Structure formats: C-alpha cells, structure tokens
Length: 139
Ligand SMILES: Nc1ncnc2c1ncn2[C@@H]1O[C@H](COP(=O)(O)OP(=O)(O)OP(=O)(O)O)[C@@H](O)[C@H]1O
Ligand SMILES: [Mg+2]
Image 1 (cartoon, helix red, strand yellow):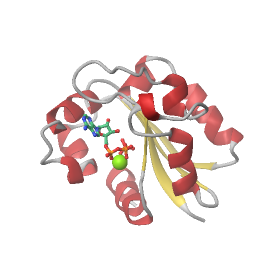
Image 2 (cartoon, helix red, strand yellow; image 1 turned 180 degrees about the horizontal axis):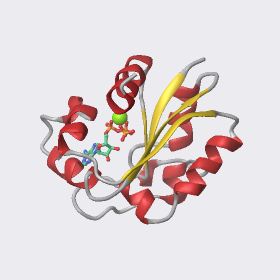
Image 3 (cartoon, helix red, strand yellow; image 1 turned 60 degrees about the vertical axis):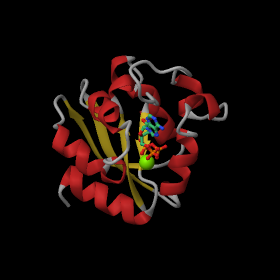
Image 4 (cartoon, protein in one colour; image 1 turned 90 degrees about the horizontal axis):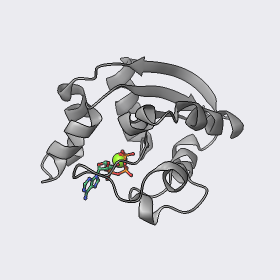
C-alpha cells in the first residue's frame, strides 16, 4: 500500500491542532503506520528534510520555524495517499488554500517570522515519501 510522511509542524502543535489533523486522517480512512511526538528536532534533520530548499534566501526562517518547538511526525498509508494528503493539506500559502483544506481552515493567512507557518507537511512524490520515511524513521 502507498505510504506518505506527514508532519504536524510546530505551529500546529502550539495551537493544539494535533487532534484535529489526526481526526481528518482517520475520517478519510487512512491508516496510521507510525506516529511520534518529537520534543526536540535538530537543525541537521530539518536541513536534510528540506534539502531542496537549502539554497533559498528564506531557508534560515524555515529552519528556525521547524526547530521552534515540538512537532508530531507520522506515516500514513492508503490508496493514492501521497496525492490525497497533499490535497487535504491545501496550497503552501494559507491565503491561497481552498476552504476545507487544513491550511485554509486552520493556518493564519499572515504568518509571523518570515516564513509560511502552514500547520502540516506532506511528501510531494513517491520518491520524496520513501526518502523522508527513511530519514525520520530509519526504515
Ligand atoms: N517563498 C517562501 N517564503 C517563505 N517560506 C517558504 C517559501 N516557500 C516555501 N516556504 C516554506 O517552506 C516549506 C516547504 O516549501 P515547499 O515548496 O516544499 O511547500 P510545500 O510542499 O507546500 O510544504 P511542505 O514541504 O512543508 O509540505 C513551506 O511549507 C513553507 O513553510
Ligand atoms: Mg514540500
């Protein structure tokens, strides 16, 4: 069965949205394969996770945001889960996300701190999913 990696980012944990994100995953019928609360994530792990963005001018703000507090990371499985989870998350910019998506329903349209605080992450392809699951869970 197809698998993807998801993260409830530090803004989602701070704002008490872990339960609502998990509820949407379960409601959609996806299976939780792994689920971990990580109280301290290293900059090195975030650098590897977002390796495609390392050379962007805004990358330091992403690293600071992603290491700013606890996060919840997990693996879910189901038919077409990679694409479906991306649809459920909504567009990267909360102000562009469609109503009904997590980012539209919960993320604040104007994020503080120079990066986009958008509650959740999801792998963007089968190759990314495999790479990210290995990176976070070592399997
Ligand atoms: N132009 C930008 N300015 C500031 N932050 C950005 C910008 N583009 C992306 N980001 C931040 O980096 C994250 C990763 O960017 P990416 O292009 O992979 O978007 P995404 O795939 O929608 O998000 P994610 O990978 O977190 O699921 C975004 O979710 C956002 O927090
Ligand atoms: Mg991405």
